[in-house]
Length: 139
Image 1 (cartoon, rainbow, N blue to C red):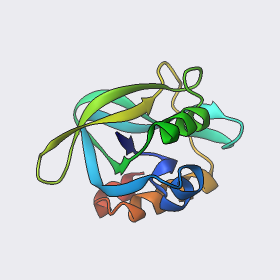
Image 2 (tube, rainbow, N blue to C red; image 1 turned 30 degrees about the horizontal axis):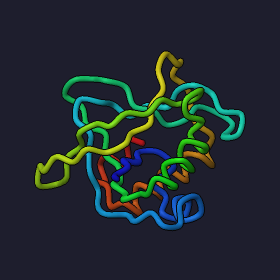
Image 3 (cartoon, rainbow, N blue to C red; image 1 turned 135 degrees about the vertical axis):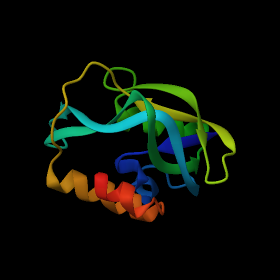
């Protein structure tokens, strides 16, 4: 199965620690969504990565191939189903091919600011996944 990471799980180091058998495949994007920091995580000391529906926008991220065991591990780290929900959504690669992948998100949270440490993990992950430089600057 496929997993679309757009937050701290874009970090190849973090994914290797959490899901050693997961494989990064390529950068991909989710259309008609926007990346935001919202909610509040005591562990992360601030707001955390999320996506919200917004027509005409794109969220870039990394596509990973994961196992059922990896999904259970990700459920644990994402706090599914109490902190984050998950769904299978269609994402696209650079050539426009559509791929169905698991995506985590939460709803009805106030926008906020992440801790600098958390933002650094996301920025490193964005570089690990080869996301467009202009997009990385917006994170």
